[in-house]
Image 1 (cartoon, rainbow, N blue to C red):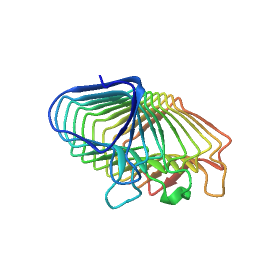
Image 2: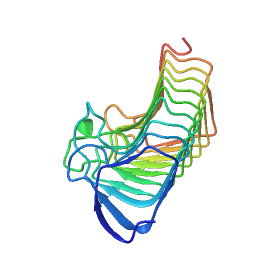
Image 3: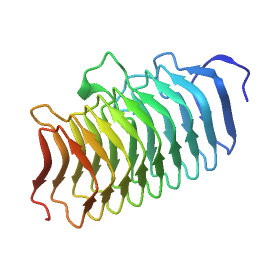
Length: 235
């Protein structure tokens, strides 16, 4: 439990521990690199303000990079960070009740993603609030739950690529270019979501490309340029 105040990053956590900011601790990375790297299993990072990451998309400069399993990242404010939370080959983590925004001065396509999963399985992305980010993306990842998140003023509220058997429920997405888009991602369940105002010239509520065996039910898709968009689906 660090004393209240502002600390300089970066932080590297290489053993299981809990870092609890109690809502009174800021970690400022000075505009370079990633603020916190979790290179361990079983750590918890909570109630921190993480800010001012670098702007390297190649390095995935983030508020938190997760490179381990069974970690918890919850109740943090992550702002002025290119990416919010980045998981690579990391399983059984919980990302919950975080407030995430990217670099406000960058164009929409140059911002980073709020949460990014890469070859990561059985994670839970719950109750997060995102604004002014690029996408929330799931790449080559299965058996994840994405539930009760809110997202606005981004590009893709939620974007799947080559990611099967995920659950998407009870999310609210407003004023993004695209709501939910599934590419080459079979067996995904999408239900009880509310998607509104994807109303630009390419606005899509829920889109599918070369994707089969989906369950799409009980969603509200309101004031979108296209409600459902199908491209070679089922494939």
